[in-house]
Amino acid sequence: KVRRSNIADDVTDDLPLFSTGSDKEAILDLVTGRSNAQRQEIVQAYKSSYGKNLIDDLKYELTGKFERLIVSLMRPQAYHDAKEIHDAIKGAGTDEKCLIEVLASRNNQQIHNLVEAYKDAYGSDIEEDVTGDTSGHFKKMLVVLLQVSECYALFAAGEEQWGTEESIFIMLLGNRSVNHLQMVFDKYQEIAEKPIEDSIKSELSGDFERLMLAVVQCIRSVPMYFAKRLYKSMKGLGTQDNTLIRIMICRSEIDMLDIRECFRMCYEKSLYNMIKEDTSGDYKRTLLALCGGDDDLAGEFFPEAAQLAYKMWETSATTKVQLRPTIRPASDFDPADDAQNLRKAMKGFGTDEDVIINIVANRSNEQRQEIRQAFKSILGRNDNISFLFPGVTLIISIFCQGAGTDEHALIEILVTRSNGEIHAMNAAYRAGYKKSMEDAIQSDTSGRFSQILTSLVQVTFSPSHCTSTKQRAIIWPSELADACNEDSDDMEIKFMSILCTRSFPHLRRVFQEFVRCSNKDIEQIIKKEMSGDVKQAMYGIVRSVKNQSNYFAERLYKAMKGMGTDDRALIRIMVSRSEVDLFNIRKEFKETHDCSLHEFIQVETMVVSFYILHGD
Image 1 (cartoon, rainbow, N blue to C red):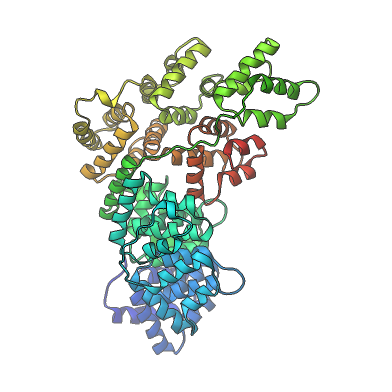
Image 2 (image 1 turned 90 degrees about the vertical axis):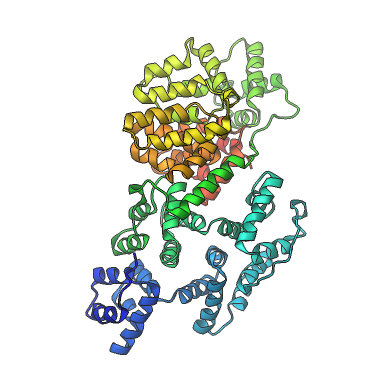
């Protein structure tokens, strides 16, 4: 998208735009339509023609974030990086996130140029300035990244050596070639049955942990790393404008198309639309010009992004995820004693909520059912303990009773439960409401949406019944690809027949091969070609298959963001996942939103019991 033409003619035409007052629209179009190299020629020509510094004049004529963005665009990239590092460490405090982003993501040549530019601009050594403002292993790793070393010695630092081998790990990640480290990470995952990122998160902390994770993420995929950084810079209240400006400038001539595609794969909107919603005025128009286009209008991958998507689904299919709950069965459990204490807490005037929370939130669901039985044996009734109802019955009762239907709850529950959990829900529903869950859903929903939910409830498929799972993993992706060219009704029927009746491991392979045979993004196809509850159900299946913990993390975020809280969704997820994978969900929440689930709940609610379900 950068204009490539005769620069001598361009400079002659461009200079009056900078010298005849502040024509913001013309400046915006010109600056974003030239490469960085061309902009440097314009700076030199401006100096020759008018005897003035163009950047100084731009600072005088423009204001606010628009001025910061335009001025930053006029600097050589290495000098812009040097200024970002200098600003990150000057004065009181240090912007560690800026240091991490810049030094972890630049290649050897870019680091070399940065070091030279810093020396030229500030008359000091960047390594000395950085080490003077940082400490510990964080400082050591930054030094390694600045030294542009070419050491390829082999190291063997197993996970059991953490705590004494940080320096070896620093040298391993700081000095290896990208291709070699990618193979190392793949082998590590094969041996450890978990990605290297999980080991870093469990063994390191603070800025050092964030730096090491950034290095690993950049080795895996620089575009994906920047997509996540951009998302975090704009989500929630307020915008991290320095981060947004820095990334949009430094990647616009390198890999912005790939970043856009990664952004679309990870989040539910295009980078273009998120910038459009989060910024305003000439600042927004300049950022959108640098972005280059709206990927919500497309349905296919760019070549590099297709390779990344294929690799992502392969990783999803081969990674053995260890589910980690936050609530476990209590030791020294006495259901009769708990029942008596609950009775005391609810007897007389007022209620002792602390006692109730301490008991209920620190017992497994199975133990809570024993307390119910003990309570009934002692008092002959279950008065005032509806909060101890079995999880599956409580979940179903939430959305199938009363006026209206909670479609989001139906989708969330049915697309995330295993075959065994669906069987248990069917039995619990029939026992509790004297009719089948399938009949209840069909009477409260309609059309294709009802068919999808019914298929999910029926649990008719088992991968072991396939004559050839590998063969079908080739046939079904082709059928999905062919369905993309059919009319909407036929496409929905074909997608439903495959997505609603296959196991998660099987579907991961199907989606992986779908990328190969179609070069399309299945999530985007669903968003673009389907609508209403059908789209939400299909999309929920894909997101849950891809990363169920991340799906629940996003559901929790949506339940609490903005005005008001969706308390039913919050309760449902916290209760149902606390004994399954709430710890995994917490990690996904923190990684995606740069805020812990605990902190988010603390801000959005005043309910102490949520903190306990959440765990430490």
